[in-house]
Length: 246
Image (tube, rainbow, N blue to C red; front, side, top):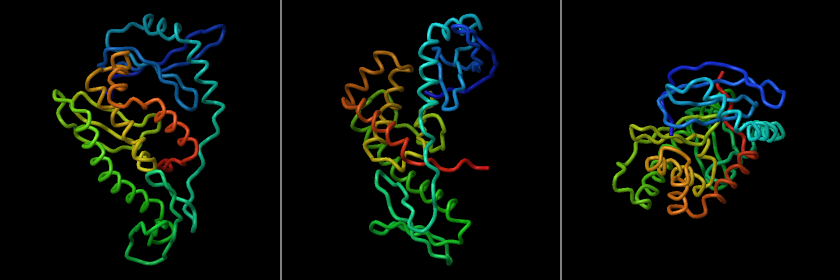
C-alpha cells in the first residue's frame, strides 16, 4: 500500500566487508520494508520514530537477501526498447499488433483486426500511441477493477477510486484513502495478469502488509496467484516499457 513519503536520509552499512549505500525513507507506515531497484539501489522504508540503528539492524538481518537480489537484477537483460516504425509489433492486452502509419491528419489511432493504425506526423507517433494506451487503460482497468471487486465480495471495503500512473518499480499501489493505482504498462499485458495486480491491491485493504494473513486472502480470492505473478515477471522481460519522458 502506498503511503505519503515524508522525508529521506542516506547512509552506508557494512555487510560482510562490503559497504552498501542505502536510502532511508520515513513515512506514515507501520512496518519496515526493503526495496532493491533494477540498478541495484537500496531503499529502506520505515515508520516515523524508527531509529537509524533499528533500521540498519533490520537491513543487516536481510543482507543476504539484498545481495542476492542485487545479483539477480544485475544479470537480467535490459528490456527491449520500443519501436514505432512501420510494421513494428505493439503489445496490447497480451497480443501484438503490427503498426501501420498514415502520414496525414486528423490524428487518430484505430485497432483493426491484427493491425494498429496510427494517423499522424512521424514525430507524433509515440505520444499519440501513449495517449491511446491511456484512454484504453481507463476503460479496461475500470471494468476489471469493478469485476474483481464484485467477485472478491469485500463488504467492509468501499469500491475504490482508480488511478493510472507510469511506475518504474511496481505494478500497482493503493492508499488508505481508498484509491487503487495501476501501472499504465499493464494495458500491454493479458487480462488475467491485470486482475492479479488488482486483487493484490484489494487484499491490501484487508491487510496493510505482506504477512501470512495477507497471502491467505490472496489464496482465497485467487488460488493461482503465484503462477500469474511468475508469468507477469517473465513477460516484463520481453515487453518494452514506455520511453521515459525527457
